[in-house]
Length: 62
Image (cartoon, rainbow, N blue to C red; front, side, top):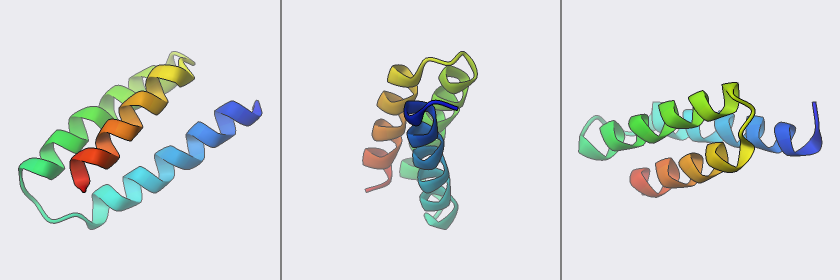
């Protein structure tokens, strides 16, 4: 695993934990869409898109 892949994996874990703690509602639903897009990008080994989606998910939760 490259350092960039490791960073993305750590970010995914952090965003997932924040999502799990968030109260139900439209913000959480929106964040889930971005998180799922990040998972898809991560599977395709597209770290740039995965990180962009993770950032969007974090913003949606705040």
